[in-house]
Structures are given as C-alpha cells and as structure tokens.
Length: 389
Image (cartoon, rainbow, N blue to C red; front, side, top):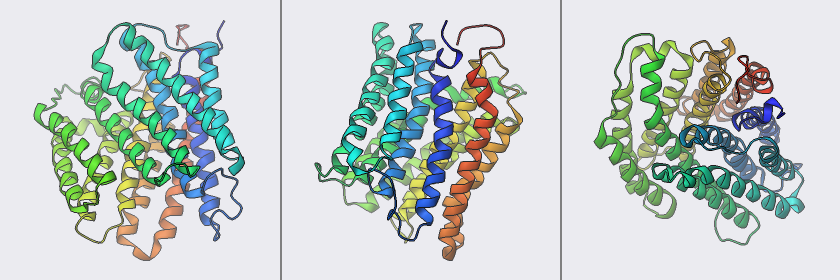
C-alpha cells in the first residue's frame, strides 16, 4: 500500500513547494534586511544568486514537477513515478535545497544532487511521452530539458568554471518558465474558462497571435539575453505585449472574476503581459528592468503556480474545483497585493523601494502559508472517494 502523499506527483511536490516558498522567502527577508547582505549568510552561493536560483529551480521547478508528473499520466495513459521512485525524486530535490544552505563548501555536492533531480524528472516525464509517441508534447519536453541545462550552467558559473553571470542564467530560466506557462495556458485556460464559469460562454484562441507569440518570444529571448540591443528587445517586447493582449482579450469574460481558480490564472497572464510592457518601456526610458523581471517571476510564475496547484490538488483528489477552500481566494489576493507592491509601488513611490520589497516579501510568505494551511490536509490524506491519485 502506497502512502497517500506518494500516490501521484502533485501531492509531495505541491506540499514541498508551498512549504519551501515560505521558508525561502522568510530567510530572504532576513538576508535582505541585513545591511551587510550576506555577511552571515549560510548560502553556498552569493545570497542574491541563491534567492534567484531557489525561487526558480527550487520553488517553481517543484511545482512544474508536480504538475507534469500528474498531467503526463493523464495525457499518455502511462504511469509516472509513484511510491519509492517518487520519494527519491522529492528527496533529491529537498536535499539540494538543504545543501545550498550549508555554505560554499557544499556547492559541488549540491550541484550533483540538484542535477540528479533534473535528470530524474526529465526521465519520469519523457518516458511515457516517448512510449506513446505523443509528439505534440515535444515543446514541453524541450523546455524542461533547457531548464535542466540552465541549472547546470548556473552551477558552473557559480563555481567560476563558466564566464557567465549566474543571475543571467536565472533570467533565462525565468523566461523559459514564462514560455511554459504561455504554452500550457493556451492549451488549458480556454477550456477551464468555458467549463468553470457559471454562464454559457465560448472562448476562442485566435491562431495568428498564438503563432506570432512563439516567434517573437524566441527573438526576445535571444535579444534580451545575448545581444546588447535594448531597443531591439524593447520593440520585440512591445510586439509580444500586443499579441498576448489579443489572446487575453479573446479569452476574457467577466464571469471568470467570480472564480478564484480562474482569475488567479488570468491575473498571472496579465502580469506576464505587464512584464513585456515594462520591458518595452525599459528600452527607451529610465526604468529598472528588475521590475519587469519580477512581473514575470512574482506575478506570472507566482500567481500561475499558486492557482494551478490549488486547482490540480482539488481535481485530482476528487473534490469540486468550483468549491475551493475559502483560503484560496485570500491567498491569491494576498499574493496579488505582493506583486503590486514589488512591481508597481516602486514606480509611484521612488523613495520607498526598500519598504516595497519588504512588503512584497512578507505578502509572498503569507500567501503560501495560507496555501499550506488549506492544502496540507488535502495533499496528505487519501481521496474521499477512495480512488487512486
């Protein structure tokens, strides 16, 4: 008999991601508030690099792991890791998080353990897809492979073996996660909206903006990361804002704002759209690019993962996705307030940057504390209907 928490990938990874989101951000608050930033830090890499890396390759990739290990089983009809194999995957992820808090001497071992998790996750996701030759998932596999490669490059750069900034590599990983969110949103959100709102509605996904967004995103990725051409990046970001805005306008219906699990996902996409708008302005005006990056990271990735974890955990434990726990809406509102504090407040209160960052950090930790409080009992116990999963 497999213990409930190891029956399917979403259970241990969503719970671990939620707990880690609170712990990592709480530690980051203390590191950030310390005037000597990092003078007493236990991190294996520079504290700023640790924060960036762990929000992406720690928190976000755990959510991706839980989602894909669950979704791929549904897509292919083939099993994904459960039981001992799933425990090994979660254990390698968790051990890497601990080792990255064990000081610089632990960096080589942390790298090996973390990359072992990346390899194990890729195999666990790719094996059933390849077995049924489901070629339409090639884009998702490619993004997962590139995220693993980016993690390897991060460790090489952090160890001084690669002449690249570790933060630049994390930025690339943020862009890859944004691309993954946009891909998955195009597949599932129109259907989610049609089935999730309480009024009849037909949601369309216009073809040419969808295709244009892919081409423009690749060009933006290359320009922003590898070319010293901020105005080219700005023009590409502006074009992406237009085509993504057209898709969001086609998907929008006022009824979705009455459903937390829908408006949370839609708000994440609005944050991604806002990130491209900010990147467009940053190429022409004096505007910190970090605001655009945090619109992607805290807004796009943070809100999308919180809303998706909340939805998937209900659906795959046999619960009604139209009746989420009351804390879900509260956590999404709190996180949205945190995104506004991190991205918008510095634009209107230029002298209050440190206060804005602290507010955003605190609200992030609170939002995921609420998620853990609401979902730990759901993720740790068997389905009420006695089904598997």
